[in-house]
Length: 404
Image 1 (cartoon, rainbow, N blue to C red):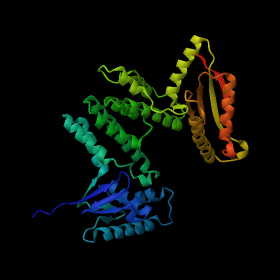
Image 2: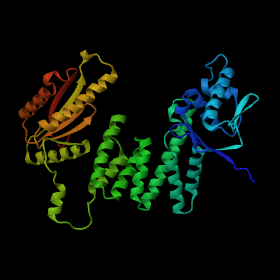
Image 3: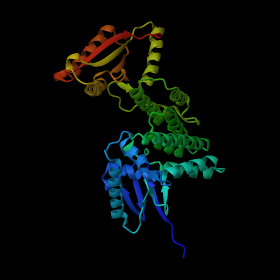
C-alpha cells in the first residue's frame, strides 16, 4: 500500500498560519514575534537548507542582535519545535538540522498561498477560455487575504516581497475587472474592485473601474456620491485634485441620460426633488464649482452682484500644540463648522469643503453688507460658549465673477 503524502498548508498573506491534519498553528498560539518570523522564513524557503548566518541576519540584522547568534538561533529553533510538537503531536518532525544550518522536512509537502497565487495568476493570463480565466482570477482574489506577513510588514526582508505580491494582486484585479467589463459582468466587476480597493485605496485606476462598474448597473446616483467621497479622500491623502481618470468618468456620468426610454415630466420631477430640504445645500467641491460657474454666468448676464465666502480654520499660535493635535483640532473644528453651515444658513445657500481647513459658501441674492453680517454670525456661533478657543475662524468675501 502506497504511503499517503504528508501535506502542510502555509498562509503568509495577512497573518501567519500553518495547517497540518486540519490543525492550525497561528501567531496567537506561538506568542513570540521572533519564533513566528523564523517559521515564516523557513516556510518561504522550504525547498533549501538555510544557514545559521542567513537566519541570523534575517532575525537580528547583519550587525547582529546577539553576542552568540548561533546559540540564540538554536534556542529559537528549540522553542519553535516545542510549540509545533505541542500543537501537531510528536509523530512527525517538521524541521531538520544539517551541518551549519536548518531545513524543512522534504517528506512534508508545503502548499504556500504565495506560490498558489503566482501559479493561478500565470495560468489565468494564458487561459484560452473565458471560464478558465475567470476561475483563475477568482482563486487569486480568494488567496490574497492581506499584505504578505502583515504583522511583520516593516521587516527589511518582508518589504520587497510584500510589494511584489501587492503589485501582482492589484494588476490581476485590474485585469479581472476589465474582462468583467468587456463581458458586461458589472456586479462581479464591482466586487473585484471593492476587494482590491481594500488593499490600495489610492489607486486612481481602481476607482475609475469601480465607477464604470456602477455605471454599468445604472447606479448613477451612487456613482456620483462615490466620486465625491473618493476625490475628498484623495485630496486629504495626496493634497491634489488633479485626477484625470476619475474626472473623465465623472463627466461621463453627468452627460448620461438616466434611462433610454421616454419618461413623463412627472417622473422626471419626482426624481429631481430633494425631499424636505433644510438649511444650506452641502455638496462636494466638483458640484459646487459647477454651481458657481452657473451663478457667475447668471449674474454677469443680469448685471447683478453676488458673493462667495471663504472660511478658513487655523490653530492659534498661542495654543502651542504639536502637529498631531493641530490636525485633530482643525478636523474637529471643520465638523463643527459644517454643522453650523448646514443649520445656520438659508435654504438657497450652497457650501462645500474645499480642503482640510477651508469651506466655500455661495450666497445668492446677498449684498456685500449682508454677506459680512452672515460671516460675523457664523464666527459668533463657532466660538459660542468658549468652544474651539484654540482654533481661529477667518473669512474673506469676494464677488462672484465668470473669470477668477
